[in-house]
Image 1 (cartoon, helix red, strand yellow):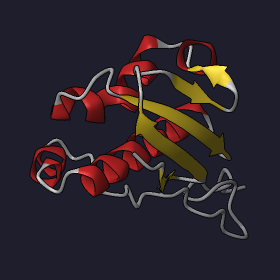
Image 2: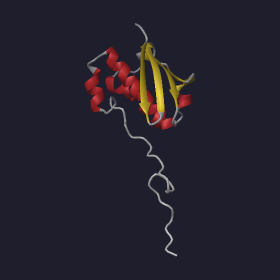
Image 3: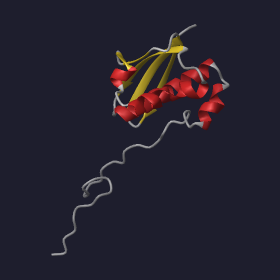
Image 4: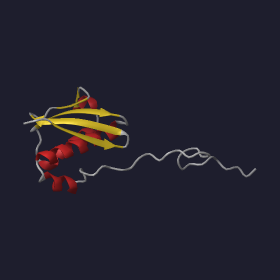
Length: 128
């Protein structure tokens, strides 16, 4: 089987993954999944597409994650894996869509406005 290459994004994170038939080995930026995402919630979230489609341990994943933080990167990896699985089998799409794994989360950080402390927070008002 050939290698499937897909991309996933979340906030400012970008994950490029290479999926191929294998024993279920997952590497992110040259480290194992447990090393790169030490929090178990992040590990579960990144591998959720495999559990939803019941394909755990059938594919090897080599991911390059860049930008943003750990949570954004794990969700970007999850989206990329979902897209790769749909390329393998089109029937997975409805299962993954039902779990919300096929949708790119559009929420981004709101920009800071001039004359304000942050995006929405204002400077303290002083009457006198």
